[in-house]
Length: 331
Image (cartoon, rainbow, N blue to C red):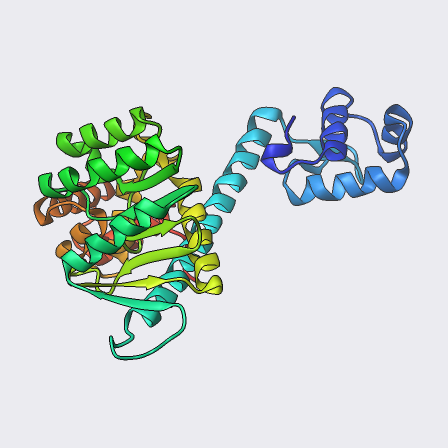
């Protein structure tokens, strides 16, 4: 039952036995549980590492189980720390994938390279996407990091989306959390979901990206001007990395129909991302772009976080955020 909190079945049995029979020693536990002494000692070692047992103050050489209310808090705190570490690893993977994307995106149009095609201008990009959409047979994956979508973009996307879903092509799209504050974009995403598309949101995304049938990807050359130029990538190794990037982000994203959640520290995903970017020295404008919000909204979020931390400067906010557990301690 406690496996999700990091406790295996054998250690859980020993822990429960110690709670019910606090005076039992190793030999008593062996007899009561019907397992070997080695198994009991291994379980006690694990419980000790997890701080679920402690030396008895009354009986030298004996271990006593920590009460369940404290023990469960310990396990959940460890799990939260593990999740934070996992999030850091995910961010590192995203950064590595973004670097891979950048290396391909910086190729000059005249450079011949297997698996890379350059598109210049919005018309060329839209035409290529239309062809890819027409030929798609199984799946379309997309990152949409620009926050609220323009009326023009929504109007251009609707017919293609409807055709794809009508043919049974699976569509999964990840938007920024900020789209939840823009009703036209929410209406479009809801319409997409009603037709069978799947929509989720995250606080930030590494780049705009569309992957068709896991064999072709289209990404912009520059995130500052996604309409200026794009590259079409078809290399197997590149597509494997980009699909893995999409799946890792998708797993952490929140379904659009679900209310935005807060973590154990009381932070929304957008706030957790904002405090991390603040600590890394990002300006309000850079934070706004990453979150897909206006600079004014980014300043409001930053100000609110600083007030909650009782900080008078961004440096102090970073220090206080680490102390409060909002940010991991840097080695």
